[in-house]
Length: 443
Image (cartoon, rainbow, N blue to C red):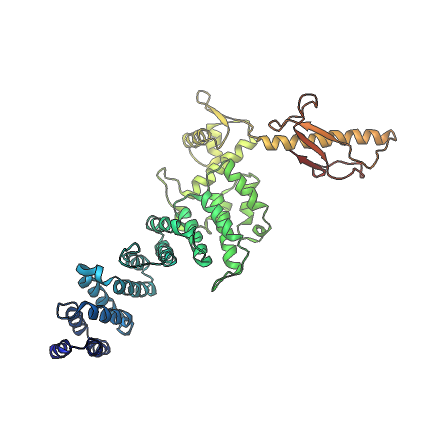
């Protein structure tokens, strides 16, 4: 082999020199001899071979690595990277190809993190060559996806954060969708369940069924919707979770999901029993059942908080002892969880530690109060209409109600004081009955 190198090195014409070296290279590749391959690499990177020739030879070697057997291919690729390292700036294009080849090899072996590490070694911010932003985005998303296959949210988040600076200008719909999926999964793994639920739900609402070369099937959208429901149920109990639950419960697609029964019970604020919780646990991923520092699992904490919030709707007050029995935990832990929920404004109430009693407060929101006022108004007007009908008084088919209320208050106020919001009938009254849906609200 030394004589072949000397013969090729002595050729003065650069094109012929490259062809002669390529002939040697193909012989080495066909022999699957790792020793000969390493000798060829050492010679190519030596001072005997001009840089222009070295680049072309390593480019060819990188592209033809797939012809080597798996284990030899891996060994030779790593050897090239190690030998190039002192002069890596001169061989950036070749390093990129080799790292991508190695990543493909690791991915085929389902060594996800190793594949991600290999790709993360590519210098995407190099000033030596122009790199397309679409390529940068694709690599960041690909690396994040590989890390997520091993549930490594920390490293995945680092590359998704890099991608976030590029995705806003991206017109590549497939990459944008992959970015959204990765981001939702990262939030899920980091137990930011409410944020993850919103991201999953957004993905589930994609209307297109063909994005670029990628086909979006109904099963994938159903999985995203199911993930949104699961994350919402696991989220910290409170007003924000209740709003997301309402959105999901009213989505007709959710009624077809396997986990719909538990979604219904959680939305209706019913206390969940152990058989129901155990059935739900079978659908969860390992990180959604991880053990927390307080010796509760993620699922345990979510279910305890949900049942506590449900109890607050049923009871005016309850002792620590009875609450602990209801939740299936020691009384002091029930008190601690309740105090945290009250402190975080996720439940309204107060704790009497002297009497060892929790007092719950009504948490009806202003919008609900407003709705109740309108319902009361409809009922009152219906009573008037019934009374008029009994006395034989009929109404003309024209709008009859105009009420004026202050926009910041759910209470009805006299016209003489405020005239800020106009409440009128949508259509002329002909049925003799009023419903909440009959009204139009104009600011």
